[in-house]
Figure 1 (cartoon, rainbow, N blue to C red):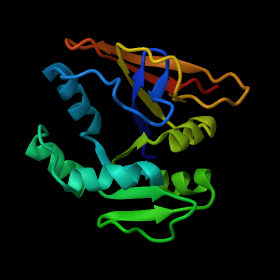
Figure 2 (cartoon, one colour; figure 1 turned 90 degrees about the vertical axis):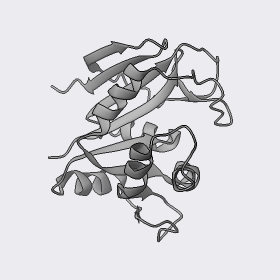
Figure 3 (cartoon, rainbow, N blue to C red; figure 1 turned 135 degrees about the vertical axis):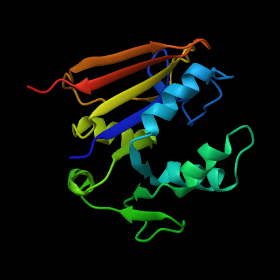
Length: 187
């Protein structure tokens, strides 16, 4: 079965965005070792899953071929099929993207059961929290920026239940960012 990986930029205090989704706290420039880590993370991936709100900015941004990104990364982002999770869209307004709705666990289960490589999601916050709460994430890649913002969109859902993870890897990078990789602790 395919793995679902969640890769999310986060602050040191656990937020993936400011109160209104601001990302101005992210630490740049990234170092070559961080770029190599992210390239290795996405190498076995052949599907990207996005929430609708994130897709509305993410897909057009990559289609516009952002400056400062390598052609290889731009091509990968544009050429990799995307699945947009939405309760309001019934069809995709974007090329190379399909829309799924309904039961999240069922939709992700069907994706994971298909043949192919790994699946990665970058969120947004509602999707990331829902995936974590439902136990659907196989690898959680927290890209921890050396910044604290005190409030915002938390990575982890408020479920009232303890969620346990096991450490898979920790990678510090020259730019000050640290990647923490966790897997759910399954009994």
